[in-house]
Amino acid sequence: MSNQHPNLLFIMTDDMGAWAMHCAGNCDIHTPNLDRLASMGMRMENLFCVSPVCSPARLSVYTGQIPSQHGVHDWLCKGHLDSSVLSDDLKSHFELENPPFEYLWPRVGLRDDKPIHYLRGKDAFTDYLADFGYECGLSGKWHMGDSYTPQAGFSYWRTTANGGENYMYPIVLENDEMVMKHHCYVTDYIADNALRFLDIRQKEKPFCLSVHFTAPHSPWAPECHPKEYMDLYKNCEFESIPFEDIHPWVPGRDVPFAEWKKKPHRGVRFIHANYAPIRETWYEYCRESQRGYYAAVTGMDAAVGRIIERLEHENLLENTLVVFTSDNGSNMGHHGIVGKGNGTYPMNMYDTSVKVPGIFCWPGHVPQDSVCSTMISHYDFMPTLLEMCGVPYEQPKRLPGRSFAAVLRGESDKFREEVVIYDEYGPVRMIRTHEWKYVHRYPDGPDELYDLKNDPQEHWNLINDPTQAQRIADMAARLAGWFDRYVDPELDGSHEDVRGGGQIDSHHFV
Image 1 (cartoon, rainbow, N blue to C red):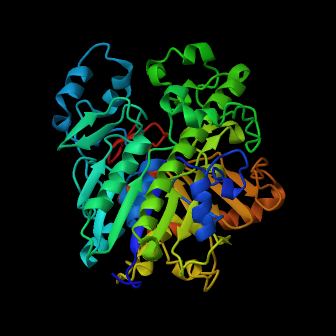
Image 2 (cartoon, rainbow, N blue to C red; image 1 turned 180 degrees about the horizontal axis):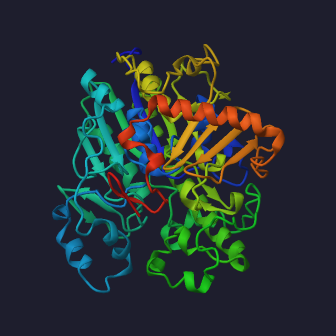
Image 3 (cartoon, rainbow, N blue to C red; image 1 turned 135 degrees about the vertical axis):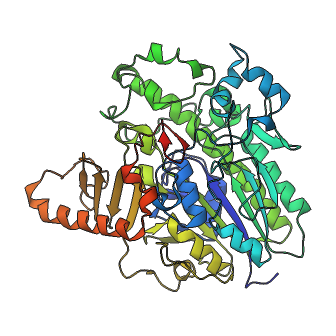
């Protein structure tokens, strides 16, 4: 191993907004380990996901493709595994008419399921690392199809079965079958398996360890998180989140809170946009969700600290590139939404949904205690990580990403002639510059235009302002031209009936 080929620790959380770190200016939240990591490296202020929902965003991180190239346009509600690999305990409980509450949620996704290998025929950055001689290990959430079968160059494979998991009753891969762990905090379980990889890895090889936490994805009920983390926020007023009225696009906004509590998933208080409460209890709903969300972040932060401490103890940190990010962002009351891109219908592209945390640390190579304001997308990750690891890579012409390794090394604050960010979520597409954002919805809107310089919170939609007509036309043309350049016509999300309720297979959505 040499400085030319560092180890890579790639940490990805689930539904974590860029705002949800103390080092990012949130004075309410406790993230001491992330704050320390940021002080040791570079924090990105303008890092964007490729789609504001987990599965398409994750495939884009790993492949550098946009959803309209890899074909996953919504979170995967099916295609996780062959139900024959479920433990006897799971099979028997899934068949009960009224199973215990902990089996209700996973039964929907896993019973009678068949695996779909969405990565088949696609190259992930971990494939390149493995081919070059890296030992690749995965611990945690996969949610890119076929969570049972090792793929993408990983030889160590310790996954969770679904997308989100009930924190205290996760379904995980152990001894070649999927089992439910009872009273086992999944955040700590994922960290334990990451540390296990460090114990058994081949010491003569560089490694890539991907740690995919399910935190801070719902559920956020007090019984889902250790009391020590919930107590930190017992009296918190969450002043870092401006309280706003419930957004008019939140589905089910007129469902009474008492009725919402009676829904089938109430046993774990699974928060679904369709069960949102009415305005009279919106404040209560937000506060309960915020406490659980912050507790989940702090629990994850402690787990990250354990892994970093191990690297320091084994003198590995000096030659390890540590990357921390999330698959997509999240609103926790922002804009009157609790959720991400599918927290509303039509799906939204607010910065709180599409901006994600980004921390890069490699002592002696990434400037310490630095903050980068350059706009960067997850589709830029594959060329960047491979360049930082010294792995040869000739990028296919139809991939939109560019390496920002020079930015990480502090050599430049530019890596494109003009930095513009593009996002998509089915028929919803976005183009964003530093000062303006245009959101286009196929086939006929509603569309949005925001002046981010004067309205950074995106409160005033200028789409009907006649003085902005030329700007709208120009941005719409640039948006259409960019997607025309990269879209696979057979996988074009603008023609798919994506509503945020989940993807069943290649062209079927809930």
